[in-house]
Length: 77
Image (cartoon, rainbow, N blue to C red; front, side, top):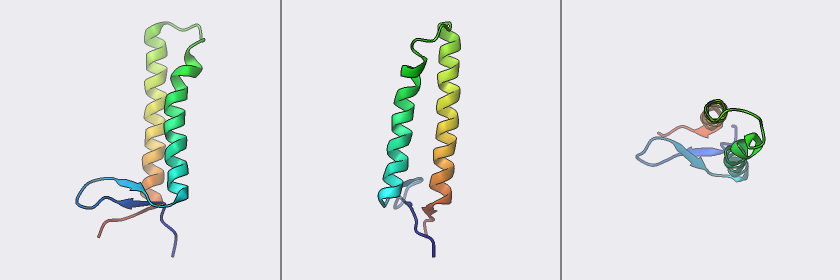
């Protein structure tokens, strides 16, 4: 039996970390979401281009995070 990193919330949609691996993935996700705008701060881009890059990067990160939570999460019963 595989070890789950996330477990389903009771009576709600979504998952929350239930072991150290889940917490590490969650913390890395949060750190990257914070660092993306900081990394793009000094780039010579117009504000709309910079915003678009930030939104695309956060969308991709969120999709990967959700996929990991789905694959490594315990399904609700």
